[in-house]
Image (tube, rainbow, N blue to C red):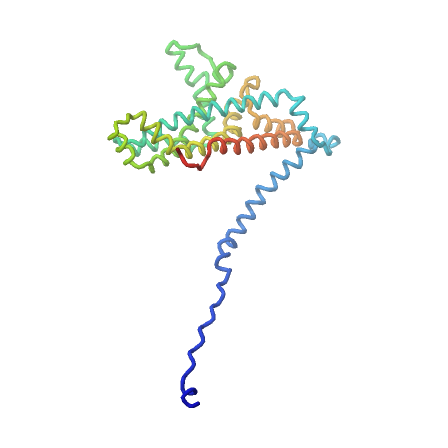
Length: 311
């Protein structure tokens, strides 16, 4: 008994305390106020637009206000030819702008990705238009297109065209003029994203291709383009949405004219709400535009296989 009592019992292992969940939740708790604030700023306008799209709401004619059901949508699709005209022009504007911006942006990215003297200055000059706001861009191009002090006057001095010509007031030239103005600001966006992705392409791939006798065109087609696929898909999608919603440049540059030739659907919505005060119908048009962009984004990402492996 004495020997048994003399043998000390080993100390019990310390109990593990359950790790507190607070440290893991702390980051979410810290960002929760900002997240809720952003959600409120986003959710409230979206819900309001959906609500007013089902209403007749015009502050200047309060006796006509009330529940409209789907009358606003029915009117847009069946009784409003301007809706279809602006929707068709919006699609034309997006296709032309995004296509040209991608082509020129890709070319500029490939150029400034090369090693040459003054490359840093060249990159800064290429990217600088992207820092200019849409309203300021349109103000610059309004001055450039001015019939008295702009490009057309100098062309007339050189014997090209006539004095007093305004490209922004002629239905045959207003669309190309607006395209060029927006290209000046939109091309750097593609150049920036594509150049950033070009920096990650391994030079070993090009060296191996040269050893195998691949030409520059084959290297571009089989190495560069597959590597840039996701960057091109993402940039074209973002730019397509932005160009579809383009209001500031066209509103300041042409105001949708002449004769409605440059009126996009968002610009038509702005005129319907701000000028005509028909907020119910404008909300319905906004809902239609939202649905179009939503399904376009889903279909485009599915067809392009964004994020998938390049074969």
